[in-house]
Length: 181
Image: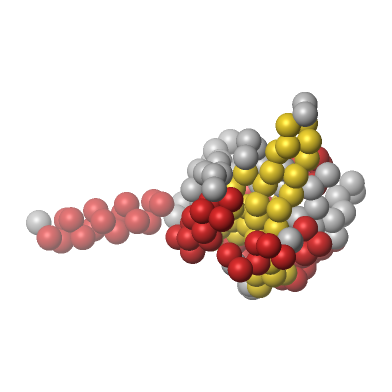
């Protein structure tokens, strides 16, 4: 009986490593590429930020650094598949980064101020990956250097991005927030 179960276990494990059918996508393929991080450390910073601001920011209860945005990935995959780009990222050797500062971005919309809070990071290896993808797949209409790596902590109504005019770089880090990082 043990021998049959052992053989059955081997079969199940082996099946999981079989190639996918061309029309099937693995569950891990997202519409963007990210470096996913352990959340508890960033949740602690968010809790300190909430206490400092005297409010409860909206958050996604997860932490990541976006490597390629959904529009960028869509543009890149004109020359290849999303699965291929995700696989390239998984095989990328170094995924290091350094926290730089705690940032605040805001816009005014319909007479209301919307804010977003994030940790600006220095991520030269992620930038190198973006440049590698641009070169390898000869991607047009993708500027690998327009990249403001950050970890979103929370926001008042919705996250704000470069497209809305929020540049998440060290210039967006007010001194009043730095003790929270």
